[in-house]
Image (cartoon, rainbow, N blue to C red; front, side, top):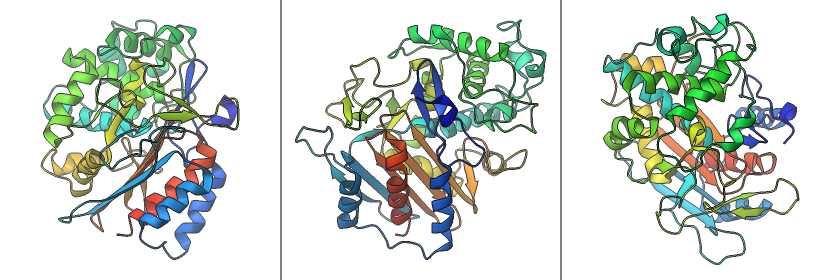
Amino acid sequence: MDVAKARMTRRAIAAGIVVGAVSLAADSSPSVEDAQAAQARRTPPAPLTQAELNRLRASIGIPALAAAAQTQSETPLEWVSGVRRRGAPEPATTLDRWHVGSIAKSMTATLAALCVEAGELSWADTVEHVLGPLAPDMRDEYRDVTLIHLLSHRAGMQTDVIDFAALGLEFGDQDSRDARRAIARQALRQAPAGPPETTYDYSHAGYLVATAMLEAKLGMPWEALIRERLFTPLGLRETGFGPPGLDGEGPQPVGHASWFTPSITPHPPGESIADIPAAWRPAGGVHATMGDLLLYLNAHRDRTALLKRETWRLLHTPPFGGDYALGWYIRDGKLWHNGANTMWYAEILADPAAKKSAVAVCNDGRMDTVTPVVHATLISAAQH
């Protein structure tokens, strides 16, 4: 992984997290962003069909490509093409689970909003106030950083934590509070990328610091909190952590990577390299069915009773300018995000004005190759 190439730029298309040596780095693809901008100026593509999905998947050899869309009060539409694992005959299905990478960031931000509404912490809580006893050696630049700064990537924090101890982190742990605190301490000792508020730097580490704040305040691991406060109220019964199939959910799609050769290789959930360590899940370690993703998107799209209207508005508004709110890119009034872990790639879109939600996912981590195809699939699905 060329970390310099993978560095996140402010308006980069790909905000997904990927594993690179001992760090997580977001991929940057300006050429894709330019292509998207040009596409937006043209007539929108035709609504997605099964034949078109088959063509898109086959055009670059993705093992499986899937999409879903829903307009308010209408039945969801779902499409899938391909196989769960390259070289095996089992077809992917519309009920399968897909790793969604950094799309988890919006879920973590939504969890924070639920806890704020419950009075358990405040948006204005500072890192020093909450984590001071756990990180007494933090740099002075971070002491007044708030939860809002961290969740909008405006804390001035670097993208990743470079720490060789990360190689020893657990991959299937259900309570990673100790590891997250260790990552947070290391992140808070690193030199900042720039001053808070004026510096936008897409930071996975920042989301780990925010999560450490939540866990310190509520005394529960993120996994338990997000299941209780977000997944269960929204009915997300097929949403979990790590790669699909890790917790015995039955046969599921397998992620594929091509780190060292042009050929893509399957990496089933039993392999230690099949996903990021469990400690990093709040920044990008969630899987879900397309149906669950639509339920989640619809809650944001329609600003349901899960949260107060003013809280939804805060989540969907960039607090310091730019186009990144709290876990979401805001583009032409639409909510968008993507995610990857070098073995999967996904994009989601919620359009409050048109009352539409759309999802596109694949089990192929070749981001430079699959991003244009997955994005085209998403936009076509959203035309329904």
